[in-house]
Figure 1 (cartoon, each protein chain N blue to C red):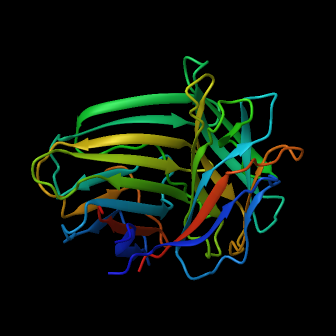
Figure 2: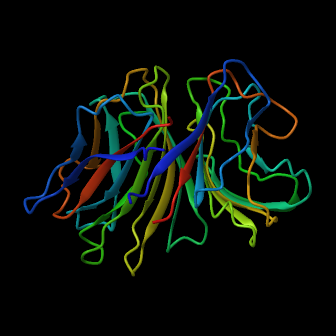
Length: 176
Length: 166
């Protein structure tokens, strides 16, 4: 039986950095999409930044439920947003953290060609062999009936950029 | 040989039903991945798995969940199915997504561990681990939205993948 976990595209950030990582012209031939990303931005005033996820360059219709924990809290926390302009909450490393450490981020996007709203699953960790480190899981919703044809990842603040060696790969998964 | 998901079976409901079952699961893979995109007829349902029609008290689970305002954790032992917090909304506008990793499912010497991620954007996000205390190979998986109450709505999709080790 055919292997249906197919790499569609990989983006690796070069020495000049990049404001975002974007997959465009995503083929409609799969059932689900999976993005595996290794991310670090050039922020120096915080050990963590939210990774912003947007679809089809849309700036509306996003909401989340998130659960997070870090080394400085004795108990984990939870947060939510609605009516947002992006999906945030999943954390990525910054230049304030241990050198050469990048986040491990996984974004699962089922049924991306359907005409229903899109529910997604995100897991992200920023382990650095130091403190604080962050782990977060996110249930995201894009309340839009459009087929997803592009996915953009970016640091939450527009002045930030991904540093060299940040990377992301988009996979397509078929259910038959 | 590339390592990846191989689709075993997909069920998309044409009408509401209480339980979705995958049977005659081949034992030729290393792990299974079960992906559910679903809504339910009754809100606040949990997501339960039962293997090989075993209704005995042979399951246990631990769940970490976030509602958006609070984090919580729970566990249960000697239950009659696996457990995961509310993960399926009643509206098609907010389908729940559950991803189950069923490890080493066909071995006949150890109990079976299941790693789970549940996502309901309008409800809760959760991570869980479940155990089925049986050395039998898993050949059947039944999925319910809380045992004995509530239906999966029409349009809900359940896909079972197999993963082979290198």
